[in-house]
Length: 375
Image 1 (cartoon, helix red, strand yellow):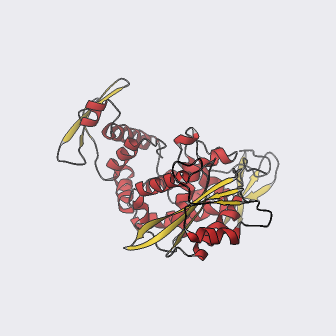
Image 2 (tube, rainbow, N blue to C red):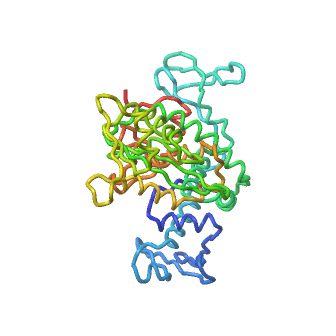
Image 3 (cartoon, rainbow, N blue to C red):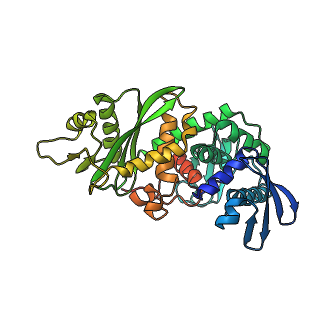
């Protein structure tokens, strides 16, 4: 189960479970759950559609607190586990030629299973091979979702053990992230977003294993689509040029305006990557907060990154799968209030990933095709 609710209390409720704070059911609709900041225990009760908690947050603010979210999620997970087996069962693919589900196994080509369609009589090999995954794709995408929401690898491993009875080492989870983010990144880079004519660029300092580095980002103003994220040790012109080059490659176009702060490296890199004699692209720099055009669009992204700095803890300097993974999470998974609850990808392209966006995106990436891809 992947949590789509972006309410901070919902995420903290998920973190309670990931940290081992399992609710204790003491009645049909009554639960005890430990406080995360003291040795107190709060009581959560359910009466029909109404939920109540004895914690101060719910008592005084009358909101759904993190403890209520934790209990609701815990109940949903128990219900889900009762209905399905965690280890995936082998399923037959649809015919690649006519889309029929009426297929049978028809021998093997080397190690690959061959299928025959009983409708069109054509044979094909299923290259997706989801049945070869040891664990259900729900489990894999759950770990991706938790990780990029800021839950540590060890706590994710503990979560899988508590709720799914799976003994998965945290290093295995990290390998899943590396493997499947690389596959998804190759796929999403083939998509062509419809962008505005204004891009924003900015950099922020991040601490990686005790050393400070710079995380550079380029974002489209209208869609909030994050075009590029690059790590560097310094803030030289070549570092700035690199992030501009990646943004141009992924954006498939050159904008009319690039907005940055006053860092001199931006001006020099802009002249190298965007300037032409027709002045088709202009550089806007040294912008103040009160000015009509400012750079707080991308600075809000940096605030979001700060909220999930745990993602950076296992990061290595050249560890692009994690940086690419966060870009995928930001563009394709995380809904934005400023976009009406849509993701940047939903605004920038005709791509419907459904409720479990991670799982759908993984399947599309493994297939290498997308019915909603912009031609």
